[in-house]
Image (tube, rainbow, N blue to C red; front, side, top):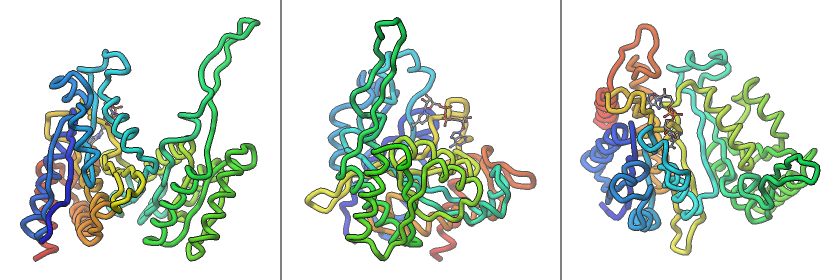
Amino acid sequence: MAANKNLLILPGDGIGPEVMRQVRRVVDWMDKRRAVRFDVQEDLVGGAAIDAHGVPIADQTMDKAMNADAVLLGAVGGPKWDNLEFAKKPERGLLRLRKEMQLFANLRPAICFPALADASTLKRELVEGLDIMIVRELTGGVYFGEPRGITELPDGQRRGVNTQVYTTNEIRRVARVAFELARKRQKRVTSCEKANVMESGVLWREEVQKLHDEEYRDVELQHMYADNAAMQLVRAPKQFDVIVTDNLFGDILSDEAAMLTGSLGMLPSASLGDIDETGRRKALYEPVHGSAPDIAGRNLANPIATLLSFAMSLRYSFDMGEEADLIEKAVQQVLDTGIRTADIMQKGAAKVSTTTMGDSILMALDRMSA
Ligand code: NAD
């Protein structure tokens, strides 16, 4: 079958290489059992790149990322590099990728597998079967707006300033991502801002509504103040399908939604850029968790967040929804049989290593394709 599906894998630091090894096994499985071949390149990022090249991501690695169909990243950072100055820290590698690839839309699904519903702090009936997608604007808003800074006032006080700025185009392009996703889901978008107290929120609401009326009338659009959305997420999270919001509110709402589902080891993410003239969209996929230095190198890490990130790349970069479904179903089956890594361990379940979790998921994939 056709090749040229360019995947750049950046395992990074800590548990990154351990969980990524399980992804490589699934990539090989796709090749053998589904005749889907990826051109996989692997390279360094974060502390590993600092050790090898003196920088958190080398220029040649950046070039590979810019030319890949999808980049899959493990995690960066660890105590070894904690004392470096800010500009040289492992995290700068990740920030450079996000910035130069212009990844403006951050997708954070919050899915609650029934087998893990009891790990949530909410009641089982509120979260069982939960499947929401939060789309956060990632390159604009108050984290980047000018003017910013801390100044001294004549009376000796200090004044801290950040500026919330959004333009029409910034709002429309992220809203478009949300509407397109909703079309493949339950066709419902909730757009969140604070239009009651912020002009940038008024603009956000107006532009999202305009885009909806022009191009996405088949999708149901609801506007909600971000503080109400925060409440609704813990009151009745299943009312949502796709949530789209700005950088600041998205930061908070996506972490809140993540906690509905239980464990950090289960959460994937995607960050998308614009579609270029060849029809390709730059994209970076990564688990939400970090490099977990406390368990690194011990074969204890949960590889599911990274495997589900790979599944997202199949769905959103390679148009392979069927294969993405297969991976998600395999994960669900393995969880249903009571197999757990330590982070999601429950009474009566079988505690397994990173490698054995990988084995179990491959066996489930085999069973489904038999
Ligand atoms: P962390 O996500 O690495 O770990 C938090 C806790 O969750 C730890 O107890 C860890 O053992 C556990 N955990 C995380 N992922 C797990 C998995 N897959 N399986 C089982 N348990 C898992 O966050 P932290 O401890 O705050 O940060 C550790 C390092 O990671 C720091 O250097 C930090 O800067 C970096 N970090 C990187 C990223 C990233 O690469 N995107 C994100 C967050 C933190």
